[in-house]
Length: 170
Image (tube, rainbow, N blue to C red; front, top):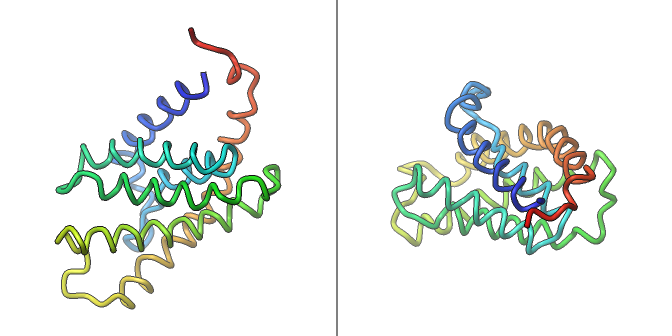
């Protein structure tokens, strides 16, 4: 049941990311709800679960929006894997770890996205500098994600602990 719920949540997230969540922009910076879901499952279930969640969401986003398939998928997968490495050492019921991990996840994701885009000749910094992108996009988005990510983590945590999640579908 857990996999089915994650798939439904991921599809629902991709649909909302392209429609409703566009209106959550502040100064052109939009929170990345995909990262919030990936971080929540990486903290709750570990690195392999975070990596596969990131791969699935990334592939959906790549298929729908990207010029080059795989950049988002690989970036989200790496982010989910790295964040999931701390899963055993995190107190899952606390409010602080989602703040820290969402902040770190955006920094990891954006840097891996920039690196993969550069190597695929799809570089996102068109004439701009890295410092400009870091100060105007990455850090504000990391702070925005950290603030909202704690709320999303709490919702995913309650959903993951629900009794119906342990039931088998087949």
